[in-house]
Length: 267
Ligand SMILES: [Zn+2]
Picture (cartoon, rainbow, N blue to C red):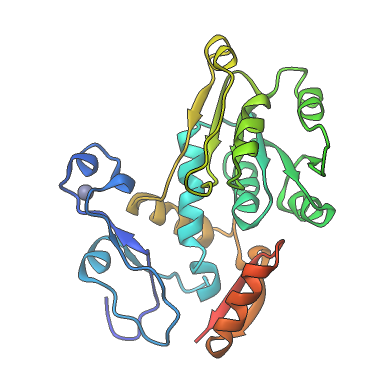
């Protein structure tokens, strides 16, 4: 690295020597070094992250585009863990920024057929622009199992992604799967919550449940490559730009309002 170079640093770096790192589960590293929170004009990146998880930003990639690598790497891991293949039907529940990234990557990178499931018509419109093939509105009391089965020859989806983080949606997610399908409980639920799953359905339909977390340096590199090839751009995910001085106000607003995409904070 050199002075003046444009770089993007991940928010963590694994140790590389622990039980998990040696088994290529670096996201579960026993000594994962985090460096969260970069709302500043300058930041000191820990040495381990510089060595293992910091990259030059290609000339044609903007800072806003590059800033998407971290969530994108998590989403990539979510899809890899499900073994998505071209032509698979992937149903995505929840169309916030993360759900939208699932829609975009499943379509553009994995060539899957995507069913987007969200609560607001505006989200469904956005999902369609991101490449979703079919949309299902999950309004209060609506049945989404039948529509999804109807779109999949009565079988259910090959892969279902829960990208909200609500126990009732985790439970709903497995009902959308085909026999032998894979669900990813991607959205983290509030602590001390539990889910109840139909044991017969899990066993006799041979369902696979995944709950992927975080990312690895290899996935950060892959995410940056996907961004540099133009599959994902900040234009699709950042709908607000604010100066650093407005940070507190932005945070308060995000906590009290739903349905936002991402806000770029410019130092
Ligand atoms: Zn480790």
